Image (tube, one colour):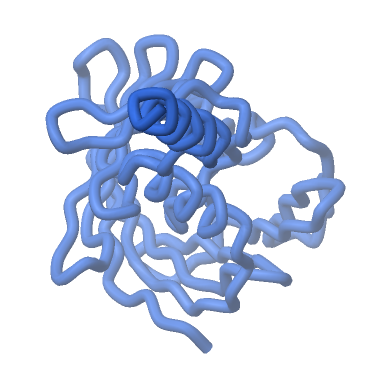
Length: 200
């Protein structure tokens, strides 16, 4: 009788254990936190430099609900202003032209480049990822695979983004992005230096 009771108890505990929700791993928790951060839209002021084709340009503006970035030469001459909305990206030229669309080439063409990354996403580190994206932890990094792109995170921040021969590598200073370098097939295309990034 005692043996039957003992076996019944073991069976009952096993049944309850099998029905309990599985404990989420640290990797899953980190992925969920990155998902949440990727949709945040806090208003921030940013200022920095873009080093491209051997020339420095200056940029500044706002990132958030009404994102706008202005690019100038080191001498203060305006190159163009980017204005973001949920539906489109607009390029405003010094001549007052307002060119709008969804194609990133609209503004990368001004620098004579073809780059598959959005500069706003690069600057904020907030890339469009989905709960359905394949993700796993390896060598201390969280890896997310999204539509051909491979995003590598450490401590909730992107450290490397790769897509079809292009790569963006991040350098941080006290948890704030300081430098972003873009490569194509191992060759450096441009560098972005972030001089100031703060919430408004």
